Length: 305
Ligand SMILES: Cc1ncc(COP(=O)(O)O)c(C=O)c1O
View 1 (cartoon, rainbow, N blue to C red):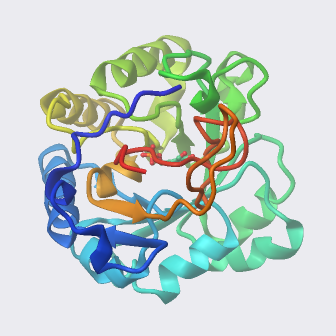
View 2: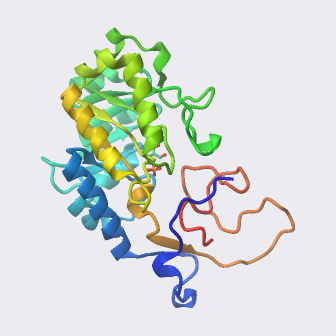
């Protein structure tokens, strides 16, 4: 089981759970704001654009707050792309960016996704739809799998054997990469800076020559950069170096770092089943459950459920 990397219960330590209905999410707006300030600071000091990964945090009642601090959103398909545009996560069409990645796109949805997105990231260099996407004017990227497993838990490791997330870096060629405007990686989960550095060092060694051809490089999510012990200076240094060396715009798309230690899910125990692997509370999430290996995850950060 992945131990929680959260900083603890924070403002919720003395929260009276009886004050709220059950189930419900309770969010500490001040904590979200202070996380956003940290992320904005990273952006300002490094030149990176920081996008919120909606799959991790999409509470649209806070869309305006998020949009006041960040440079846009990353979506994992049509519905998140619509959410970003319609619920106010993106308010400045000129400055903010909507980047959409999906392991595969449905042909009947592609046109609408292209019309909503600024960046469209494909998982395969010969995926159907790339030509149409280019014609639409969207900036087209490729997600690669750098094939370096540094995750804390194999369940969340997009570099694990037989992963379908990202085209294996050992199979890409310079010609293949030259067809894309941008490069995308996403390999981390709740991690500090050094695994990113190690991953980037491998990428440079392997496809360094091609990196000069990209307009943008997206370093994905999984950076726990709002955690107190995160090496933010290291991250800022690396981003500045990449941007300068390859003359490109660097993007980060954290999700959890935006909401880290910023909320709890309140639930009620209705029944107890006498088995070792039963979830006490479940909510919709893209991650597998750390307790029972089924469906969703009780908590990634608060540890209180
Ligand atoms: C492609 C992509 N980008 C960004 C994220 C956000 O990751 P996190 O919430 O761990 O920062 C995820 C989450 O799995 C992802 O799959």
